[in-house]
Length: 254
Image (cartoon, rainbow, N blue to C red; front, side, top):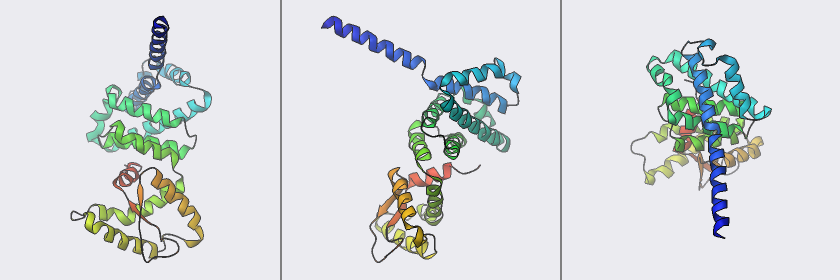
């Protein structure tokens, strides 16, 4: 039994070593590092090994479908960072240092894992924008990015449109200095009434809204709140949470 355990332990250690030695994070970060050199103006020949070597690295990562998703997402990251580099001179040094930033490597690993679960280009663009905005805000903590990336690949475009409407309606309230647990419920009820009365929710589309509310709540961006005195579409009140605010803002252009 002891020998069996020793052999099993050795096998598990070997499996763990093999898994870690081929984990996508390092290679993905390496690919992004090569692409980032393009942002700095070095051009294709400035990349170690040239473009052929870069393409070889990407092709080795996974099968054709996943590789296609990955290339698309990484290109979107690169394009977003190029835009930041051009528009924000104060960010250039930070962007230049990204290839050696371990938090950036973790962010790219998380993006790559999420890219396995969708081929929808809009969702891949969201993943890229979350990473790029993390660079912009100097917040690449994996704990902060992971939930947003999950939402990025699970939500539909219609969900994002509804989230935008809720954000536009409720975001000013979240910035109030005197907002506390006692006046929050009354404030959100008043804002929600105005939101519904303004025609933001079409009664003939109530089933689609319900689906979107459910998905947005399931990823922690909004919260259903008990409501009284309202009937029909909009009788269920939903409050924008700080995570919902952060997520929506992380998808915006620079």
